[in-house]
Amino acid sequence: MTTQQIVDPSRIEPELIRIWEGLAKENKMRASLFNLIVFTRLSPRTDYFRSIVQKVVEKFPCRTLFISHDPDSSASYLKTAISVVTPKSEATIACDQIDIGIGGNRLEEVPFVILPHLTPDLPNYLLWAEDPSLPNPLFASLAKLSTRIIFDSESADSLLAFAKTLLDLKQKTGIDVADLNWARTEGWRDLIASTFDSEERQGLLKQISLLKISYNAHETEFFCHLKIQAMYLLAWISSRLGWTFEKASPSLHFQFHSVDARIQSDNWEKLGPGTVISVDLHTKDGHLFEAARIRDQYHHVKIQFSTPEQCDLPFRFVLGKTATGQSLVQEICMKGTSAHYLAMLKELTTLDKDRLC
Image (cartoon, rainbow, N blue to C red; front, side, top):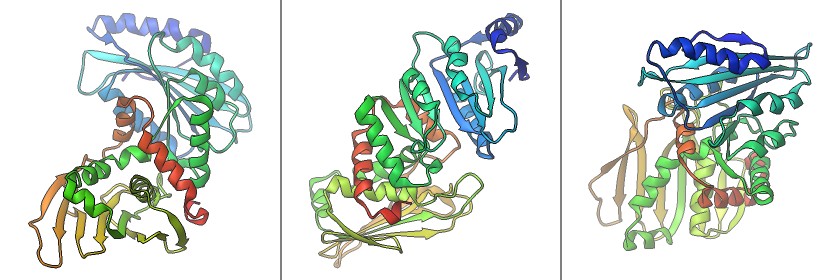
């Protein structure tokens, strides 16, 4: 990565050209598959989002426009800086990164700053790292420029408000939406779908009487809304199986018609915060499906079926490693909006409101 260079907004492209003239002598090739716009409020999480953007660049070279806003600044400012990033895996390819720092009330100037620097004829992905249910004068402008908007539900103080906001946004604008926490549950969704793919096992799903999901309650500086992935998995399963919600208790015990569902917590220091640890399914006639991560190989899941009469030999399923930035890479690879995701959000809005805050 070249040293970040502070420049006037009017000098962004000329200075990038000057840098590339020097890099051409080192056989560097300028590459970009898409434009990645990131918006985040200046906070300790800002560096976290910089790190996940770096992971994206390592997989897919792209032009990044990283916007950080300090609403508490005593002075209004608009600062821009440029750099050229080289993916670690490919020394001959590099791509542009444009940083835009905003202080005070100058947010409305941002679209005019970034518009000239979006590479034409390429998709524009927007990572909106703030709570979309809260008003922001910049969101509508950036959304109009975007091919796809990727949200981080960790930023939402109310999961209920988050779900309603995304459903409303999709209905009114039709724009493709995605969610980092939804991507983080993909491995578990694949595990359940593939394990119950036979006709016999699909029949067992209709007989479920108890569902238990456990998640990692190890809080960090960047993650404190730790039950979201477990709630997503519960809402996905209940929406797929057509369960009818009845009530919930403060202990995260959910009652559906003829089905109990319980969300429990555990603490694994080396596992990503909020990550699902295990899923257990019990049927009315005594069938039991247990799937749980293995502590010393936490991306491996041990799966076992048993009945009142017999116990099958356990087998393993390998989940994707929870590397920083992998969820964003997954959502950039996807096209459209997942119908399962929208159904899951709709299911969330029917669950007890106190459990979604």
